[in-house]
Image (tube, rainbow, N blue to C red; front, side, top):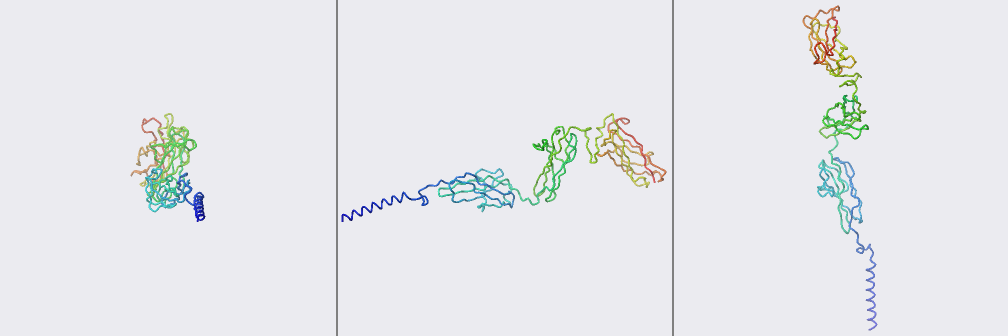
Length: 373
């Protein structure tokens, strides 16, 4: 009996020892012996894809410590400034809970983030991606440049540069506005010249030693877009008289005010059409070109023209154009001579500058005639 009690006691002690040993030998894979830290973000999630309506955005989960066992995603719609870095003040987008999101019309003019929640047995943490660019509407029909805009003109102080907008596709009509930029010699570090919005720009003293670029802004009902020209050659100082411009045919044109007092105007060419005149009643045209004694084409010169004797009528004191030409319509009077090849009608032509003395200044005079037939 005593032996039986002794065996029972030994057995009890042995089982207690085994139980204690079993408790010590529980492995981490078996559960609660080792404690994991809650997840923590080391690299924030990232969004890739175009921010236009209909495009697909893709979110990464970022990188984490703490061995997360699951990830959850929530796309949020944020203000134009991106909202808080955490995305807490952004509106959750219903149903947008996967790594991909198709940009919707409601997202236009907003920025998007994705909030990623990483979890494990010891907890969870939520972080937000950086905000996307502001979402734009669909590009369908928006202006799209297919041929770059270009500059033309002489790159010198006092000259005028012109910009051609190039070619654009998109919903019509497309309207254009322009900005002019003063840049360094490489076409960089540009400064917009405020107040200049036309397609022409007169080069000024401050442009000398710089290059010029123009920005073409295209707009239609679907949106807007812009494109810069290449830079101009480096702007040179003044070349020739004030206001001189180079015409497409290579001639230099100046305003009549740039003809100095020691030079004179020249009535360079006179053309009648038809020639000879073949009607005593039908109108005919008279074209006159004015230069100065240095060979510059002169614009804005005034012309006085009359037949001698006075057998026609026409407008007086008309100004020459940029190319130095003026075209007048001449109307025969009732006493216009007979149409005889032996006859001609003579015209007195005077080119002058407004404000000069009547018989002085830089005026030019010429007698011309047209045959009758």
